[in-house]
Amino acid sequence: MVLVAMSPLVAIGSAVAARAVSVTTLIAVPVIAATLLRRRWFCRWLCPTGLLCEQVGRIGRVARPERGEGRGRSARQTTPLQGVPPSRGPRIGPLGHWLALATLGGACLGYPVLLWLDPLAILASFLATQWTDAFTTASLASAAGLSILLVLSLAAPGLWCTRICPLGATQELLAALARLGRFEKPSGGEGSWPLARRAVLAGGLGAIWAWVARRSENEPPIRPPGAIDEGRFRGVCVRCGNCARACPTKILRADRGEHGWSGLLTPVVRFDPGYCREDCCRCSDVCPSGAITRVAPAEKKTTRMGLAKIDMGLCLLGDDRDCSICKNVCPYEAIQMLWSEEEYKVVPRVDPARCPGCGACQVACPTSPRKAIVVVV
Image (tube, rainbow, N blue to C red; front, side, top):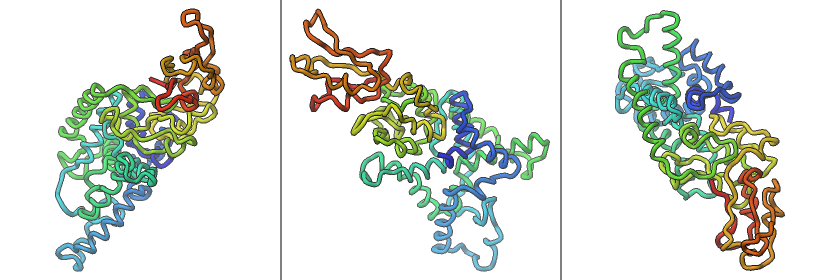
């Protein structure tokens, strides 16, 4: 959690989208301060994804030495990253500036569209991959991000770090703003400011993308307790997998796209094999972006995930059979057995004011294959 929270891109994007600065967001403040003083400081010293890409890039250079290598030419040409020669392969413009500004432009509408491209989030997603389910769509997608970066670094060493990485570009933009504040002229001469017209256009395109994405969402799934509203959640979530890894009952799974492409790999709740325990707030404690806000155990009963609904056509009581399991297992005493004059029998009733949608009743319900009581949004 701390590693992803250190990213200035994640901190700024999530704070703008959520319109709030959380305690987690403040973890990135020292990194932002260092970046204002020294360009790409984090890339140079702390980024583990950059280190992996650099080492793989060295293998690529050994396998395909550049013309003139060995006479000292390429060894003298270095990028701002420590010891990384200029990128090989296709020559592209500062794509990272486009990605970073598109993300921040979308954040202004509450949907930072490419926040999940942060290299620290990509690494965390890879580490959170459920290798026991290695051939599921969600697990393969979680592992794909870092794998693609490493293959790219092997084929074109330095390309990701110097030209594509939105976190590196964010640091360059922050450093440029610091120079502007000190009235320093950019070293590259006229037109070298990262905030060129095409980059500003990228911010506008990100805002348009965010507007379209928020209107193409399907019916929302059940989210972890403390999740911000669905319209912003899909953008603020960086798909790092921290919440799923921290969940003790393993009810958080990566969305496989069932609820729309914009929610791919975001955490959804599936009450199997357990329920959301009344004494657990781990997912909110480890979220680095603010997609899941902090929830204290005392607040759990008022933090709604959904609402339990009963289908009397499936309920055993509807067949005049004895059952009160859902009432007995409910940790919030939200289910009562009441006499119904209309049906002339005892029926279960859910009190919406007490039910936070924890799923305990759904897990315990004995009907199969369909449950008589399920949690809905």
